[in-house]
Image (cartoon, rainbow, N blue to C red; front, top):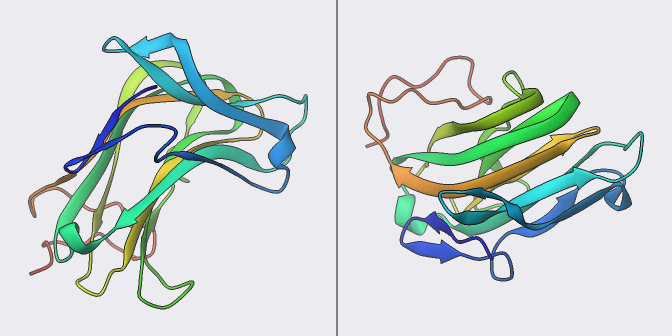
Length: 178
């Protein structure tokens, strides 16, 4: 199973990433692909299995925000796509607040999806984690038809010089939270 480093945590498919889908979960399959490796490790993947899938399919994980509260963090993964011509392939990252349904930060690469067939490339999302954050949720998905693989995912603290990609703010924060 592919191991992904997240903070000080090692994530394995059976312990962390779980299947997640849009309107029609039966339109996609997720798993571990031994034949699509990166850095010698097998990759997690999502693939549409019907001709015209509805919505999206992917994998996700969540973890406590406590270790990252008050910090600027980056979720990075190596990704590749095949025939992701409709909605494309996306990483996504959400910061949840204390109240159910409260979103404090979010980016799903909506304005910068990976479309078509791409080779391995590193993609990142950067968000500020407010001190009142409860959880971090993150993963990847393909919208419409196609397939996406991901590998070597990690979350790490970054400096204030790294711009945020938060889609919930009209302009990126200029400084990291204090």
